[in-house]
Image 1 (cartoon, rainbow, N blue to C red):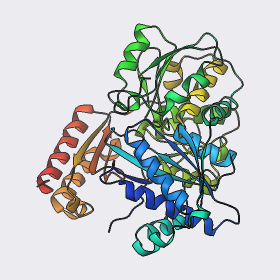
Image 2: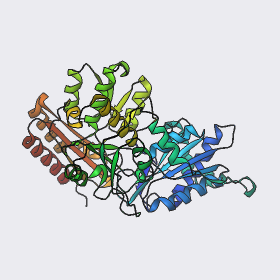
Image 3: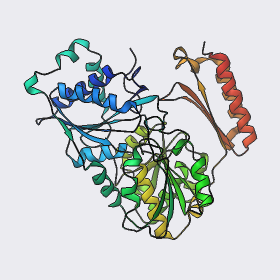
Length: 452
């Protein structure tokens, strides 16, 4: 029996892996476990993204919550960070976001939050998992009809979250022409409430979710449409969100992508200049481009590097009280304002910074040189998980290529925490060289770890 919780909650193909039964049992187990720690009636808030499976998973999850005697507060379609914020604002016992964030429509997931708005601690996740897998215990957790919980609809969730985001900046955005790619996802419910209230002229792309088109050739996973729109319409900049609006990728006025590494550099430098970068430190992951380290050294900024995954960045920030952390994917955490990565918060902070400095995004992004980086995803069968690390042919090739690169480049080969892939990442100053090396390592993995 595999581990239920991954680095980003519970994930799987919708309905077949993340089944209705699993969602119901998770809701029931969460209500029971949180109830053990609370002297008041348990209330769990629930948000969802726009994928077609979110409705059925929401129904099953809420059936579990109510059947354990807890109340479920439905927020409807909202960004993941709205759930994290509103758990605290509504003084709820916990929260659940139904989403697979940047992944395609066939997947879904459950991301669980504690009453603090942070992801659930490991010990609580472990208790929930144990109860979910205890078939007798989970059945006994159901209460009698007189003790069932109630379903409550929160009609003000999107509005209250939008007000929170706008409260973090004092500048207006008058005169800015902003193209926004909503990824046919959660941002559709809040983007106008946030970006149209400070005077900006906004153009909304991929804002017609039909249940099937979330993240489809749009959003942070594909910025081609946004880049063309920005240059064709002479926009100040473009902003792309992923399916649950936890991530933000920007496009400058010239159509160049400004990824999470560069955004983290821009924000870190600005915070340091204003005396707001705690301990003069930024937290990044092992996937962060080498250019970030060069930028940090030149600007007197310390860098703390964690394992790949926003949970590890957040844990490090909480542990040592750091101000900001970020991933290349566009997942940026502002410790002063949020308990999770927040795409729309990132966007308004960027707009405010541009207005305060009077600089174009291309000027701000130039603070960091991005090294050429090649990423190849290699799909593997379940039997090769972890085992591939011990295959000498793979290890030897990686070692040989790293020796060739020396200090001018690096190689990172790792299993994805959310998908059945080995990710091969190589970066260095010579694109042709790192591209050839990445292809060779990917081919060696396929040869040594055949899918069949």
